[in-house]
Length: 454
Image (tube, rainbow, N blue to C red; front, side, top):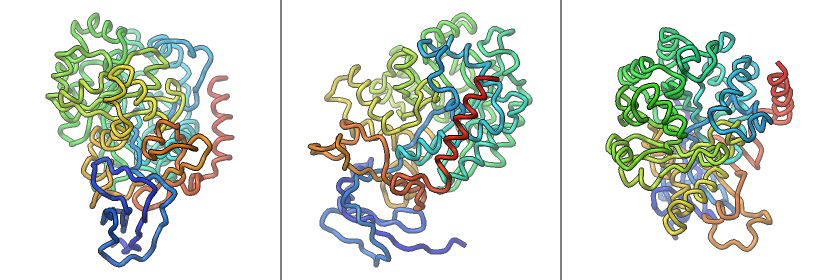
């Protein structure tokens, strides 16, 4: 039985973004890892309080949620041969490097990605790991251990590649697995790690990598297994025009037709990128309740295009945000990704329609919907998990700012002062808790050099 913890009033914040328009002007009360009360303007808590946290200097919001990443890629940031490459040649150059990853390197890469995310204000992160060379058969187990050590919630997706160069795919043959290996390990991981309670720290989803790296058979079998095991589905789709051309050449259909043909056009599915859809495809995605993770930095870096976010939302699709892999986004900073999403989408839809609140909503409530956690994460409401981020506007860049919520994005906040997951401090006074960051960074740098020298 869980010990009853203190009732804490996070009192009188400088500003608060609840992601649901509820009034919490005078703060909120947390107990046992949950929010038990929102305190309206001019009010005080209705129950006796054990502790008060003075929040007058902080902008508070729900913990940011990253709905697409590749943790292992922190080891190959800003690698010269691919700095100016679009997606397909970028991948072709990097696949052989990534195939040499060791378990120790993956552990370090995962911890660096999660630490960087947490320090930016992220409390829940989805990772798409699809590389399983022989030495990395237990890749997801390694990531689960790394996340546990940091105390951050994770959605670990069991990715896969089964369509190698010999069969017309993009990945080198030695990086692909057969369908039996993929399905057996997927079922094992769901049974071992997937948690279904409101305070779940680990979720598992099934995630064949992309149309150009997996067979239609593994897509269909993954959809069947996801329904049987009641877990979510994830893949890359419609990221580039090269991908669209590949689908037409290989399967004789466009990307959304392909998605429907393999049983993925449904509410379990969330897609990374989702850029190149026509009007009819957008309507079909919306009607099916598919989620789309917008990855602005990566899409700009690789010159892939701009996700049609508002069109998708108007059709009924859900929009979340992701930093994507740290070899294309090159950083794991979710508050900066939110800023970039706002600016990039303003180029497409105009300044009036893309507000700071909308972008922050994508990074919180929107991503929670993509990951199937909208009932307990992504907003500040009674009964929701006490996953909170505190930003301080005391740096020179914020001097002269007037609207604290808008200032986070317009003035470029890049680091949280404090971060709480389930009522526990993960970041305190800008310091990640529980790990030696200097030691981690030193070991990670050595691992990165060793990987590229192998």
